[in-house]
Image (cartoon, rainbow, N blue to C red):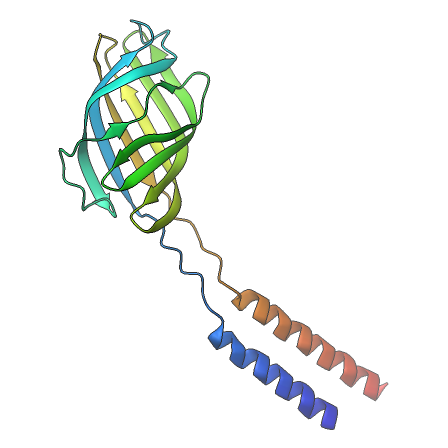
Length: 188
């Protein structure tokens, strides 16, 4: 009976510590932002383009969520060149309002002489937020010397580790298993 009381006291102490386990409260970016501007490609036909040599006059078109503090019309700094075929990671593809987008991968969805559509993934960081995975889209409708493009990026907030509660509950469960094992040994 004394062993049972000690085991129950240990289990109660373990359970009480669950309340004091710090939680991981990651501050992930939640929102969307779109840009438009000009782009100069490596060829005069979008059908054969593999990179953007330069961006020009890129400005914010719309914002949502955590990007809302950035005013529409704010200039965007774009990294160039941007090689999209083959897909090339591009750190700092864009920077605006304290946010930076590091491009991880690009996939050409559709490419013709007068239309280019690309999607991909990357990581958005800045302004005290944790680096957040984000999806993006890039489209261009004209291959002229300073073709017009639009770019949109949005974050996909994902679950965050619970910071130790699961481990504490696992310990509690293992303690209960040990208690049951000891009781079974006594009755046998």
